[in-house]
Image (cartoon, one colour):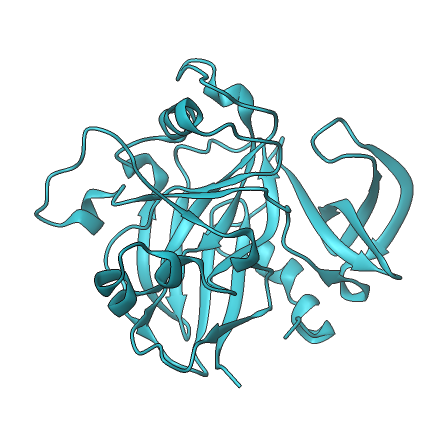
Length: 277
């Protein structure tokens, strides 16, 4: 289910609340549906400045604006690949030793949903968890890039929820069902540029209660190391995304639960869990 106008009209408030206060030099891009078209724009308060051209190839402002309450937000990017890093905070690892390299897995682009969309819990799922994460958005083609150069390939960041079915994760040969099912990849509400990506607070709230809270400065492998490592094996394209890992512990969700992922400077990604029909 797509977000209602009432939900969309709260996004500007969410962006301006808590840790998501506007900072100098920060630009927030949205992708949205309006009058039958999918468009990009720059969000400033509750006003969207319409962009013309490819977001990742110097788009220009058209001079036209629309109001946030009049549009339907879409996932902020359409990735060809959705890569994820597991076990990238010591607080999530617990007593286990960190790996010498980022542990990777993949989600499908069809798992991606927008702020306000519903997370659909499959009928045979019994142990569905949230995983609040900082997500990298790639800005240009990256193949075998160095750690020193990797920042040049990061367009910006967004908030993500690596929804995970723990029973399937333990039982299946690969994590296809557990991580890549439809709606298991909420993303948004914006792509933010101009932040210090390696020092942003990431928080998860379930029904308003804080369940996860840690800074990206505590990542075992930082953003540049992740991009460099992934690009050794997979060519990353503009718009591709990399989930960087979740902090602390996670708990099961049930239909009716509302989960919010807040990333400092990005805003709040909010989704409701519903039972499959």
